[in-house]
Length: 300
Image 1 (tube, rainbow, N blue to C red):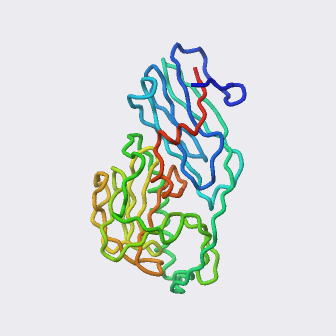
Image 2: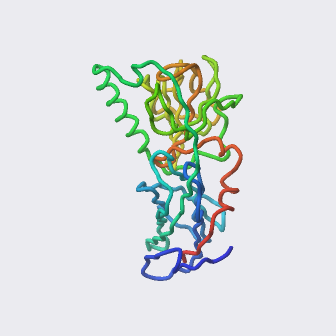
Image 3: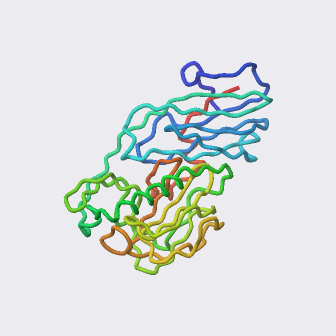
């Protein structure tokens, strides 16, 4: 492992030098909208590891691996909310009764996503006044669900497939125009699925929200730890309940055409600590491969 200059990469805060050898790994640069991997690894045990990115602090698990102990994380940036540029990343952990903090910078590169024009029912563009309280309440419920932060890692890479056949019909990041009205870039991948097709959990986890929402239709949200949350929209039937534990491959719902749609399909999204990322490239890589593209720096 190469030891990078801490003067350039990090501002370290600690009171005494520990006897342990501890390293962090993160990318120097990455594309907006794409998931990336980070890690902390040490030859001695440590506690309460976290990483802070885009104003969200992520709780990490400590596992056997790496140099002895390791923490893995998945992070990213939602193309409609985060602009290209340099952003800070902060690692923290406790070791030998001392709290360590290491700061780095990740450069997010621009990535082009095309526009997509769609035609839907007008009420899905300009909701009636009577529907506004419902939409506001659902938005609040979703916001709370996406803040869920459990530390036990239940996700793996690559993810399991939510559908047996993964045929992409609408890419992540498309700058959508509904009936001539521009909206934010698509926060997920749309997959071809006839109504009634089995939808499976790509990771083990806990169901944190279900419902029949105005725009998203039948919806399921699953927490898999470390800020990793998967979402499934436009479902015709929901087969799980909030609080229910699921395994990778559990059938959680049936696909459909509920909510704001042009036809039956599955809206499949991955949210990483509040940032929706492109789920499809994750099927072509792994946490190990992503970490090899990062840089390692010694903390102590």
